[in-house]
Length: 55
Length: 319
Image 1 (cartoon, rainbow over the protein chains, first blue to last red):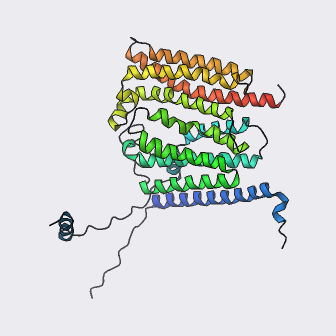
Image 2 (cartoon, helix red, strand yellow):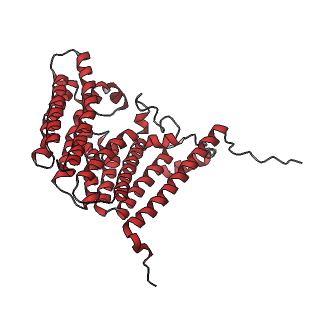
């Protein structure tokens, strides 16, 4: 038998995992803030007209 | 045998190098914020805010906030693109060696993608949510800073910060355009004030950082023309700046408060520039004067724009 174990690939250290998590949270917060901004600006620009969509 | 054949033979003879393996990123959130040059961004946002507030007409606070956010992000994007392109010379200067790219915390490609994404995003959002003119001005500002100043002027001429200073002078115009959808004499005057403020501000810094710039090969004026010429140029630009700072009041676009503040601040700036220029003074005294001028120049711009803001506030309550 000459089976080789697969290479472990890149193994992140605890510090790298912590920083990746911080980047992920920051990205999520920015995207959420952007979605909120677009929502609020839509209401501001269209006002009640946002619901006025005659079929 | 042609050169191409020789290269092909060489490629066959050499063993294939292993593909470079991407290292896991050690970048923290703070490193990405540092790429945006937050201190420069704060001055950009402040001057844009003043341009927006003093512009005539109403603007919904949410749209005003959106405009300032886009201007801030656009300025940050320009900063990130600048750091991406200048990483080689940043590594050579102690003041900039710890920036995220030369320090190895962010890969150059990541910074480029980050800067381009924010640049396109800020311009598109400003155009769609506020108006096209302000978006076009923001796009031009980012292009001017990242391409004209960073990639072209900075390494090729001692007039780099004179011409490149236009990039920092645009924000009040963008703020004004965001509110009114047009331009007028007032924002042009604010543009000129920042434009003529930039050379004495940066050359005062360059006077006591000349060795660093020389080591990095950046042709700042003290490096190419010497200290004496730089001091004279600082004085000339300050002589032009001081009266220019008063023009918003002279043209009737600002009140007495601004007039008094701009005259006093201009005279003080001029006095400091004269101290920097003094021929025959000891080198240590001249360097100290340069540091004082650099410090005060930041305060000068802040005080002028704060006075415009206060003046507008007084006008709005009927003073």
